[in-house]
Length: 330
Length: 287
Image (cartoon, rainbow over all chains, first blue to last red; front, side, top):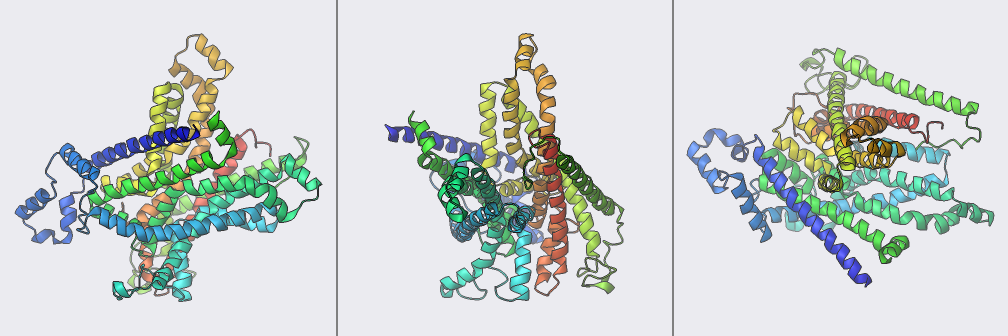
């Protein structure tokens, strides 16, 4: 019985996601066909002088750019359903290959940053709440508010100046050492190149989770049952662990899952600052170069990424929170 | 968010008057600081932006507070011009976004179940794509320029405020006096105009001010990515993007000062929004 309820709920969510993705693809496609940027011009780029009108015509025909938008959309959508996302004009590779390869780089970056900011943010949020009003709390809240006003890419530049230029500890950019064959790149190299961009993302990502944790924990700490626990003689971090942590952990984790949208945006900026070849960099290149198939693919993929985060957050509330579980059964 | 002080028992104790005055003082000083930045940005003439090859790559000094770049342009002048542009773009974008939020929020609350469902679906649609991707998309579609950035900011920031407005308007709809007004045969539009909207104005004001920092940050981000403006225009993002090429040669001032100035402006707007909310929100108005 319970399984059936979950099944229906899950199916409804999937339907909603599908309608949103469909609408998203239509809207994006329509808007893109309105753009004044000529894809053929963007494709030719600096060689414009050497390309004859006949060649232009051939290029437009080859990519199907002369067809009316509806035909092109139907063409694209039917191919999409077969799992073919089209061919990127910039990279001259299938879009799915470009996104797949790039996403691996970005996923490594985002995963490290996500875990680090989650754990570290939670910790400093708890420390701040436990020391409410004292200097430690003031420093932490000040840091969080300041970082919330800091663009991710500037944080990246700052770390670059300090750690790569002044101290020389880390490389200036790229996911792998320059001038080394792809087969010779070791895992250690990759990690070495990942540290600074991941640190950038994590340092910026800490602020919301820390502030949220602090607020929640303060509410819990001013409740009657904590007052009673104090009266029984509980104190310090064991009190927080026994009465606070259980209450704040679930909202904190779901907040982390619903922050996928900001995480992706931060990754775009951090990748640009470190010339890290991830999906974010591909997004910027596709936007600058007028690579419509790639941009369309990235829009849908990023939406799917955000949906996944929100779905996990919803699911966790439904499965883990005893109050919601009760509500579902009733 | 600034509940450092213990709640006083007596609602009109001297300490609270003091706090209220403090809040007003903070609001006044942030406004003053922002005005100074605005006026400086407007007053600076083209001279600072011109290239002076004889004073290239100078570290910060008395004459050039923020140093000069590789073309001998004064970084202080460029930064101030950039901030001015950021504030302008942020202002127009945030105003448009607040208007969108008000329209959609009110429509959702007053327009019946179907409209409500459609608007919540629309909100989901806009929230489903990361803001930055939407901004890149709109910048591409509009073919660059300040207009594209403003449109992008207007279209990405309204959903969360629209949700707040909708919830608020729903509550007002249940109020006694609105019910009575309905019985008198007033139209939905009349009620929205005369009962709901006046109640929402403080919310909209605060929502607008809290949106402002995000709008400025997104303007900086999108110009940093090289979408939108021509590289000759002094925008904070463009300045910081250019600085990347010179960081490894030790010209740290190209990145540090413009960035810190941007953070200060964003933070000032943040503080202003928070404080105004404290004043307007009846729950914290006396804190």
